[in-house]
Length: 404
Image 1 (cartoon, rainbow, N blue to C red):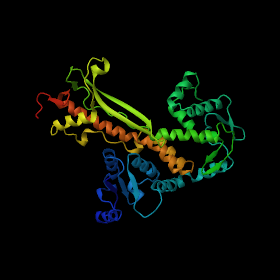
Image 2: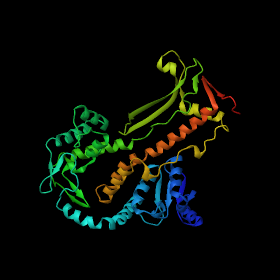
Image 3: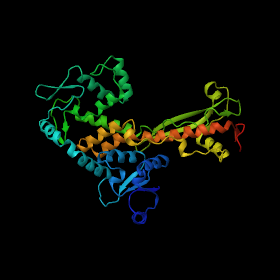
Image 4: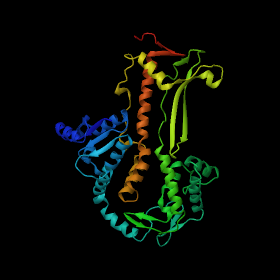
């Protein structure tokens, strides 16, 4: 895998550090020259797993409160950040330390007030669904809400997905505290909330068995394991456009070729679960009407065959692809910031933070890949009129006026 550096170090000094690590730096980016934005583009366009050398967290930007989010974004896009200043700590832990220091002055006054409530296990802010704050500030169960919370956890243990749980709740006429319909976000947040085990955690203060538990600690643990397993596979293999949609036709009957995706899941002897997706083109008549016996063609093989034939005609320039959104502008940025705050307050471990943040940030890479393929498809369709697919032969017909 390639190694890239985002650093202010002189290049000769950087290369010497990399040499001692047994690596060679393929690209050097400078923070003052939009280095972080260029790093994101590089990660989105290259295979995951490359090392990202940083001479300090300030290479990521000037605001310490943004360090964890920016570092998580690099990791979610497939990069492996390495700090070069000699510390042995996890780079994300150091980013959280910087985050805590960056927010200390801002929250110092309110922290003391809130912490005094926290040591007594008193509720702060709006109680989660299923609870209300009693006259003494302690959390109490809400009779008509707590059973619904238990139902959500039970359904999750029964291997029902969040979407299915939401459908059941809304179908049965249940409403949120505000009277609205349930959504995947609200149900997921309930399933992730450790408060339902009776455990109070705030501002670094943890009070076990502080209030009535709606679910047991064991139930909560099993649900988290299941959600984490689902999160590891979220967002992969989605939205990869077929380059030849609309221009590929079957050479046997003249019908359009359509893109088909098949997903397969199986369990290996060691108990691990494997997932695999297969993409191919198939004659539309054979798929929808069963009147053509033409065999399918593997999508990657057929697309590469066409691209080789139009090489020199189609030029995919970076300007044709919309830029990757910076982390603070991604749709899930607010949710990731909330997770970062929980980790900074020791309510989440580094592992839990990563497991829950990656699926929220990783789709940016999938979106980038999908945008690349859409741009390439537009360029192909601008110069290719038709791709005729026959057994053992592919004919590419250019549009009139297109020079081969």
